[in-house]
Image (cartoon, rainbow, N blue to C red; front, side, top):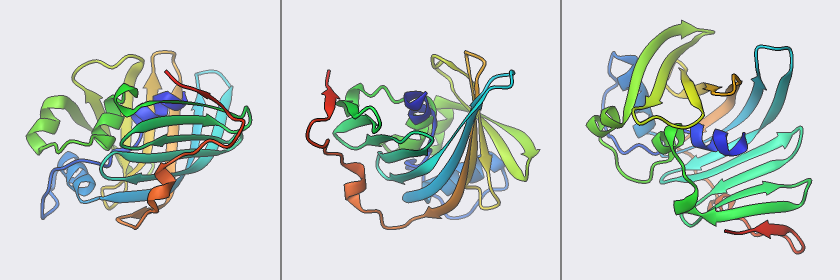
Length: 212
């Protein structure tokens, strides 16, 4: 699920520039993201099925253009994912083990490709690559469905919730196993200075590291 979330989460490295927000909520989302060079937030996450069992998690993340991500689960079990220009790290703190692969082999797709794409995408290129649809208002946010036009394995439906400033504040990920993962962002800060060391990882002595 952690890799799945990295594939589906942050949408922050779009290269489309604009000066005024459109009346269309989809265009407003793209324009707002284009104006966001960096972002940090805390998150709460729930994952469940139609049954009563629900898994909860919370943590924080940092994103910086182009293509830098730190996604850190703090509760209930500490886990860390770091994406930089060279490597993709997945770290299980309790098990004292990690895996690392070249960034080209991270297989980032879907929403992560939209959010963490290192190339400059124009508005037309985004429309060619993704299908966007307005899903109305719910829970005080505007919902947009974002789906890659080339099918992605495991993804049934992705919902993106926008706040009053057209910034992403929520996600709903519906997967092929019938699970729904809901992520809500808190204390969102955009266009801030982020320490570049947050996107690097050096395993401590003795940690088991799996490499391809």
